[in-house]
Structure formats: structure tokens, C-alpha cells
Image 1: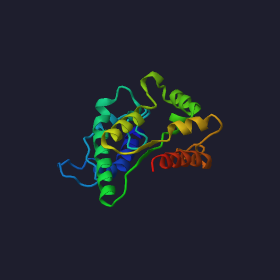
Image 2: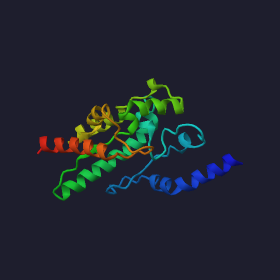
Image 3: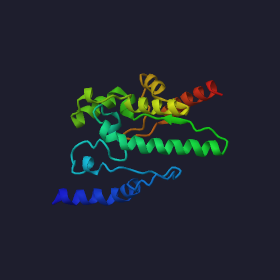
Length: 189
């Protein structure tokens, strides 16, 4: 009974998001509105297990064997980025994509803790896969891409970059990410 209650609660919370993400594709450029091929079967019924696609952390984007699962997500994401680039260009601006990694991609102790908690095989994951896919897309479309991962990893050797028990940067993490962005912007004027 508890599992049923939890499943209903999860469905009720995810339903509005899922409805928006599963809006039927009609081939019309909708300027940033997502279309989505459902992955509900891959994500439902996994209580107690890591959900690779959950519309939040989406660990499937780093999963080496997840191409079939992530292809529709990337397709939609790339459509949104193309729309953003088009909109920015229309208004005389340049669209620049900035990538902020998950804390587990930056701080080795967090990745080890995450692996242990979820009993993950680290060989199944590539912590740079998502950034690599985004960078490749941006290169083909002429979109400037800022990957803050290298700067954050270098700084994480000195001290933590994220708020305790949170996915957001602390003040130091914000400063490191901002500096990486500033250096890119200055180099690409």
C-alpha cells in the first residue's frame, strides 16, 4: 500500500511537467516549446533505484549505454537551443550556451558518495559525456559554448564549491563559474 501511495504521489507531482514535455510534435517551429517522445516506461516503477531520466538531474545524460534513452531528450533540447539562437539573432544578440555541471561531476568525493549510495558501476558513466554532446552540437551550429567544468574541477581541489546537501553553488563556486564565463567572454569579443 505504501508503494502505491508513493507512486500516486510521484505521478501527481510529475504529471503537469510530463504533460508539457509530451506535447505532440507537429513539425512547426514553436520558438522554444518542447516536444517530447515519452520515456515514461524507462522511468516508471523504479522506486528505490536511480532514475536515469527524471526531468531533474537526468543522470541518463552521463550514462554510456543510454543513447536510445537520451536521443529524444537531446533532440528536443537541441530544438530549443536552435530556437533560442534564432530568437537572439532576430533581436541582434548572440546566444551563448553555458554548461554548469552537477556537483558529482566536479567534486570527486561527491561522485564516490553517489556511486556508493546508488551502487553504481563508475565504468557505466562518463562524467564529461553531456558536455561533450552539447559542445558538439554547438560547434555544428556556430553557437559559442562555455563549459565551466574544467575551472570548477581545478578549484574543487582547494575547497567545496556547492552548498551543503544542495545542488547549487556556494559563494566560492559562483565566483569560480563567473570567472570562467568572464574569461571566455573577454577572449571571444
